[in-house]
Image (cartoon, rainbow, N blue to C red; front, top):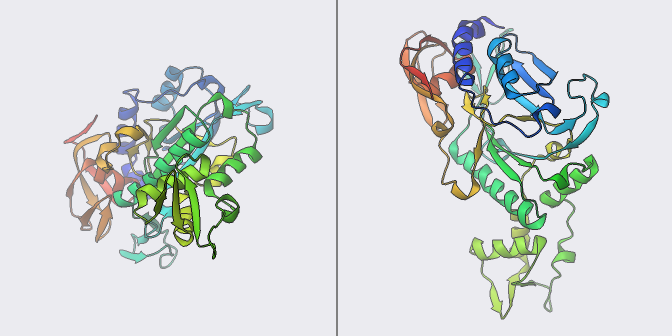
Length: 373
């Protein structure tokens, strides 16, 4: 642990434990059959192959032994989840997982390199002068989060309508994207190859467009789509009607220029991480756990009630905190620009201050106005 990290250690341990003392975690089904893992605040290492028979035992561990920066359970169910040899755990099945991150979209992958010692900031991911350890500072905005959520909605519809899954759970990851979990019994015994095929279908990899949408007309410039389609053709039909493209109505059919169709096929793809989906032993964050890359909560989302994204809605912190900045800079924090003056005590809203503390850019000096929801 660096000196910067040590300066905030006691404050961060206090507030993390205060949060978990309220027992906010969403209990996954069959907790006792899942591997539990965490990265501890005390030493920064990942501790794996834990198993707890009940949530009370888990709370006792994270409140009294190791304070979690990140807290996970396995998507897999095991006979012996605490066995440290994966091949001896006795795999029983796995939930089906999807990951959609905002930094995969154009314009949403901006990052700064911050050098505390030399009081310098550089655009992009680079090194600091001398042997100084750089702080890589990603820029996260609600606009980019909402762009990712647009793909979440597309994925949700595909999983429900094209695959027929019913138990689909959506979570804000607490940082820069979303986790989607399918917990239907029908997915449990899917192999890695079968999960890879599902991912490939969602990504529309190696798709033969002309086979699915045969071009028509003397110069094959059009496609004909029925109003009673299924699968991918229904997905494209929905996009045609919602995207504003021009099409011709022909009774129960729609005629659309082929070049417009090709654009919509690209739009129909969902930008998931296939590696996550095919992994049968993937670790997943607990619902309502803290993601200490940001200090925000991993929170379930109701697709039907989502009206827009605000970072503060995912913060369990109240009030404000006085901090001492370690850098001279005006930094974007969530959707705000925060002016920092090195060494000058500064009062910040709690979710802003804690974000900067986890990035090791400020030292917390006063929590008098601070609270935990």
